[in-house]
Image (cartoon, rainbow, N blue to C red; front, side, top):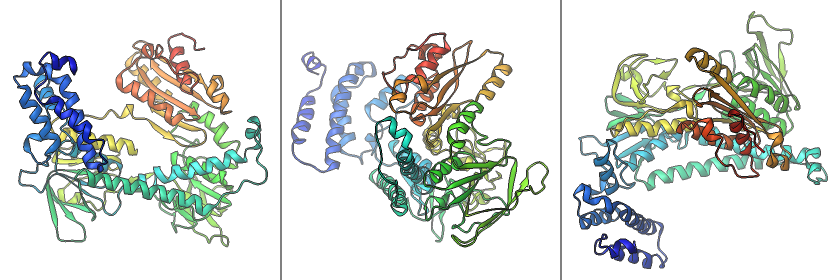
Length: 591
């Protein structure tokens, strides 16, 4: 800045802006004023970089400074909708940059809003935040459920239960503690109500924060549920009022799927929605389904003292996991614990019982022969139904628009635009994100789709590459993956004519894992030997959910295994397990 001032490349008043901001920051101020001054400093710093480019775009330094000061100090000015950086980028490339958050709302096209979002889960919330960052006047229908399934009945509270249960499991493992020279005298106990309160309080706090963030950015929240009643129009359910928007995003999420014949009472037969309340810890729990949700709850229940019986309709337990990861998981998550199970078996009838008095009755039928198996009926204290989720699209007014779904899933193209039927035509100005479109039923995928939808709404074509989105199962140890499974990668290699490659790393050779006495686990990288492209990565081991992000980022950036093999990893850290796998892919050895 000094150098540019001496050279006369900074306009008069530049340092006055910076210094005035620095002086006033010494006085205690509210958060809004503080943010305004920080923004002013940020804009001033950006000018130092952008001003040398100004001559190429015929802007005067003084007018640019006025534009920057106006955008930070007057959110109602129309000129603030796109800051200098955006205008420069727009003139130098075909892709416009995002305007400042807090820019003036538009909605000058005859509609109430630029964007209406129906549903306030993680996907809807992400879409709303990005819409405001683009200066769009935005409203969101919450249906009284800010945070949706993830925050209130899924990802967030389940992690609280898993964290508490994990501590109990660790403290009860005398042999593991002995390795550290630690001994716990007496019985390890837990307070069920306090554990449940931890999960409930976490959900409540996160939901409150999400709601506050919407208000802070100027998103109008509508507490009723939303129903499409025509093009660009959404009804406030329970009233006769409607609102309009140029574009509408559907984000209604999903609900647990309960197969026919299973009766839910919420006490002895329940879905994950009720299980997260942890109203009691049954001695014996049958978990119907052994996917992500079922596996995580088996981790919680066994740590808290329950015995678990899985009832799985597929030929193998944990059918959605990579086969090699599945074998390791069976050795460390199933076999050592009080868990048994059935495969290729349906629970065709489940009759609720009474806690502590009457058992739950489960009729078991062979999935292939459709005949009742010898162990049927099975009597347990409780049954948890984890048979997947279905889109929550029944009451959002799709029929009013003549939109056909496939098993409830709204059909969309890669830009998240709604199709009127499978393979049909685009419904103008209507988008659908998250679980309701079925592309990838993960909270962070929904958020990515919401951001993508807004990008397309403002005219910047964008498509989400779902192959690069990671997933995780938060058991102890954790499981995480991104991209193709080994079977899928081999099939792709055969179909496209390239050489398939696989390389692995082991937690048993990792200093940090050994220090933690958590050496169980592997990481494997699947790749194209000819091009070096990473096709998939699978990890089971301590903190796998954190380690996978490096791999997802590499895949998204198109980084090859050759390049990854030369990346330096901190020592000693768990991520060196990946370093071993990357180096092994190109014939190198990791120390």
